[in-house]
Image (cartoon, rainbow, N blue to C red):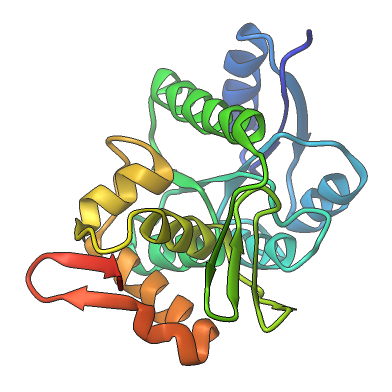
Length: 229
């Protein structure tokens, strides 16, 4: 069976070729683009398994590409690894809140990037294999982990991947208190480099979308969060 198809998006030719060479050596099928516009076009027309996306692009930048793809039904579940040279926390937080799965700062180790990619694709395969009729219900809210869907009174909520993963994780262990670090490990994998603030931002966005069910996500001061029993 052939390996997964990955789209690499970066306007720096040397970075593009470096990533392409290393991923092709691992057996992955590779597509490339140097603009946000081209990335969106390829993502919509191709069966991709993962997107490596530079944030600093001419024209439509990486955050706008992420926003577009996560708001499109055909691409919203596409895993995204962000590349950033800025080192600015705000960009990382925004990208994760929009639904990106991981990020890595330039300059980076190709081995580390490959390890991150393997981890994301491995979790994606496992989720696909484990998907069954896993439905949790709280009043009129239903969390369908097999279909990656949350509805309230039958109306689907427009959640990002991060919001859905966080909600499903907490709902699966009602009453258990988890630190921000534990939540990150559960929904993104161990040793994921992310700030505590990003979890708080995801929680704020999720509560707004849950509306009357927002109180189910409880803040435990000085510790983290839990799903109300």
